[in-house]
Image (cartoon, rainbow, N blue to C red):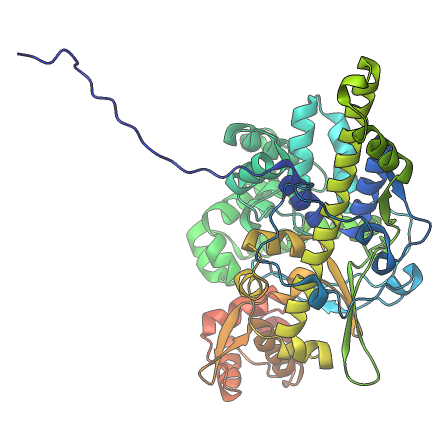
Length: 505
């Protein structure tokens, strides 16, 4: 007899993780640099009547540390954190003038880009940041509020060079998990396409190749109507990009059937393209004079010890209004049945404001704790650099290394290091500058930055009448016990914006 049921139902058990509102708040505050945190705190003070600022600015003596945490008040889980007593031991609070007093240090460029990058050398308060300049251009588009929010997040995800090195899938996940904003891959692609029409040309590209192609095609709708030189440039970048990166113009000339004159013109046009549209925009309108406030200050004391300070900037310390707390306590002592409807509604509203204030203060406390242990771990791992300022002493270090030392999740370390700066005795550096890839030297891992420094020293000392070829540079590096291939040397030389041997004569 046939079964009465033609289909079989099965149960599948899946496990998902949903962040609580408190965890989302902590994530958002942790990601913010100090200037953005000030704006967020100011907004919370305006919106929450139960939250007040202290009359002094010393976090270590009051403010967020004076509000006791009650069971269940924040809904968060801080398991896995080292003790706060150990984390705050070396932390003091500088004045704002001290925090912005000393700037100017060289900085390496990311491995995916040619050229060099320098740390801002002059600090002047009034200039638009690169982000603000892009944000202004959103006003020329006809977007709804949701689209503007997503586009602003895309802009905030750009690196300093103006390129997007974060995948759209990761951005989609971050928006959903940390910001409660739902979007789709199609919408992100569309909005990224709009961003890539912004000035400067090439901004929002996901690779150097796409960046250069965007610049050639900028404001041109039809490739067929482009001048011959632009069509040749597009063909060069689209079909012969790898040959261009290793400067094989002989191969390019043969493949594209170009005359010597056309090759020279193409070389000239390629040099006019900018691999870092973000930094060039800053240089044109004031990147070197935009104000940067370090989130950390690391100083050497006379006894050879390192003192770590978390810079508060203009962020005030906070506490809950005492009158509101006393009022709640007085109502808690009364029989709820004796309260009128208006009183119950007022108490409910006030209790909600107080709990929100308590959660915000606790989120600030956790941000302070997370930033402190993360920066202290980076100092411990890169101690030789902080002692001497010698870039070649930076050891290979990635996000996972810091995550293991702190007990924090790797995504938390990423948020801390994404947009923070640290002021040292030797200059000011973006925090991600301390994360370096590994190479081999004498059978041991060394920082790629050490190889680049050695490479520059060799080139600086070469005979300018007979400069070293890449093959000769490779042999010279191996004499210093750097085990690198010639292709790798070429890659590093291009990244450092050092021309070929022929061009160095």
